[in-house]
Image (cartoon, rainbow, N blue to C red; front, side):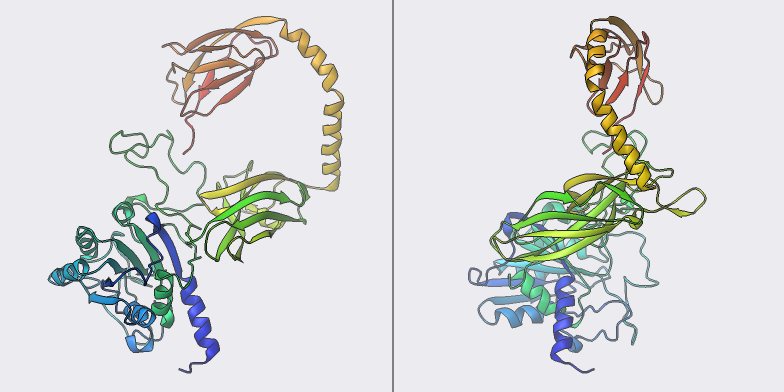
Length: 491
């Protein structure tokens, strides 16, 4: 192996990018070496190099461990208390006592937990991550969870660093540990990179390439699910108040795809799109202004997602189509532009043909799949003729507004009585549904039999609504009887 300045720089960049900050309560991170006198470094991955699956080595001497990286960075300015605590696997807790002692003697604790992969050159068993290593649940292997909980009970501020090649369930940790980061196997510069992040020499800017589930039963957990995939009743519950479909919890991820925190803050504003009506061979430029409003230089990943609003087959609620990382000094502002080829809006139809269907698409721009800052709509047409016909129709509608208003004024004065029954999708009658006249603003509420009666203009629109249910607008069209079915709203 030959080390060159270029190879070391590349290795360090890869290691820096492998870190994702998941939680930072009360800005515990970055640690200030000038304000702490001692730090405990604990855990089975604290003094190990974890290069990952199919790598050339698993030997500490071929890389920098987290403990070595921290020692190198802070020198003798801060006292380091190290204890392994436990192994990656196994049930031995005999090393807990030394870990507790190290924590109690320190101002802050960093616990390095996670997994281990087998190296290609020489197998490193026991491995719990990588090709051919399957788990029956996603809790941390061995007694690592017990170790983390034991250290947390010392009352010391705890930072958890998950060194891993796969996501684990960290629901308890997310509630009880103030700062959490994941370092996907970082290679030979792993230790230097995590030390720099912990002490603020670098600002984390990594984003999750995969969602972290809340539990093993929460699987599959991914952001680009189909609208019909998360239950029929759309009424998830909690331990205190059970619901339907997902009785005790919502199905969303603990930390979703694209998520990742920074030591600074970024504001998004003023999204614009180059064109709203496009053809299949067009490309759309999507721009948004981003400003670093925090107190530290940093980088943000601007992400562009798309949703097909109407399609012949089910499509995801969002799908990542473009992204760009931008570095901003504190106070700096830039306009970021992302390109969206219309060809990226394809789907596979019922005949498994790859096609781009005409219609409306929603553009979503943000910092993560669950952190959308702005939305806009574009319409795809088959041809320029379709666009021209659409524009002509719009002008025609505008030119007839005045005459329609005159007709509407006459219709408003003609009231009719409308009655009906409101049911849910399983045909059960629904009481307490608000029925509102769009023209007059008057409202009634359905009774215990789901029945309602209201006097409205013959050309009115009735609005049916209730918290937790999708609002439905129905044109009266002079009909005296209207029966309605309401579905529960999505999560």
